[in-house]
Length: 389
View 1 (cartoon, rainbow, N blue to C red):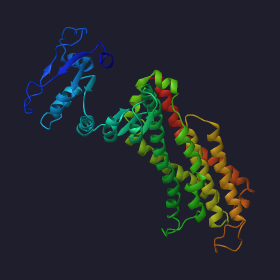
View 2: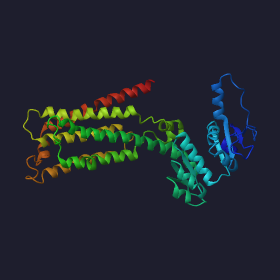
View 3: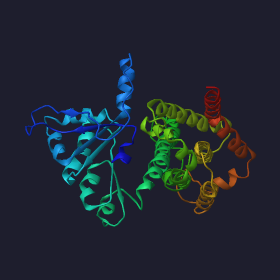
View 4: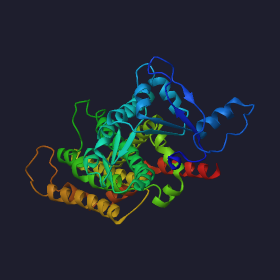
């Protein structure tokens, strides 16, 4: 028990002086072990409170816990527990374990994690937001009921500090990217409505609309959302304070969402109006103008993802190359398949003609650069500010 509570903590022995749960929750601060006494009280009350929070440890047995979890005393018990750095519930039943987790989760509105290795921990693991089971000598019941399984208790540190941080970072970035990608692509059709009388028609071929999210842009985001690492494993274990980024939601805040939406609409404006101005005085048909817009949107979205990727692997390069190659392969085969289909706007030989025009290659260079330039400048300014700060 001394190892769990650390010898620097002041031990609190919690007990009830009466079996009547309506009586107040009494605390006896007499140390049961030879822990060092607390320093003399400071004149500052805030410093004293800070010392108490970080220097107190609570040990409560199952019999006392039964009274503490009573509806008339649970808030007082929770208040005492919150003032302690460590709380040890010993000789408690499976129901009491789950009730403690439920009390903390419901009263404090926080994310809870429960870890156990036996059948008596199953109810606690199931009640917690995140359940971790340890496979050991007590069977596999805890593992079967858990969200994550570990071979040893010491692996919990890496699960939280490393994989927990990576998971949060990937999830936050991918949520923003999904909103960005869909808003940016759909906004292209929205700008066209001002030129088609809001008829609901689109300048992008229907098959491109279907396959854009399903095939053309799906693989790179899958790889990045699975393998991206913003910080190395060694750094995360050496600096546990980085775990606070997830607890404080540092990578997904409301202003980040709105900045992403503004960036998406700006990029859609660039991808729409640069080809519009480039083909303004020409006699190209609707799909010959819409196909470059689709191509430029795909390039911009993939480069945007590349800018957000922290760790590049061969799978990132392969997925982006595969997506671009898949798009042109589908476009070339589709545009060469049926010269009499889809009248009057026929996509026949559209991509083949575009690949023979220098203007198309010029647009593929200018448009993504113009669309992503504000994001590049902003990212550079933020990096300089963080280095100076």
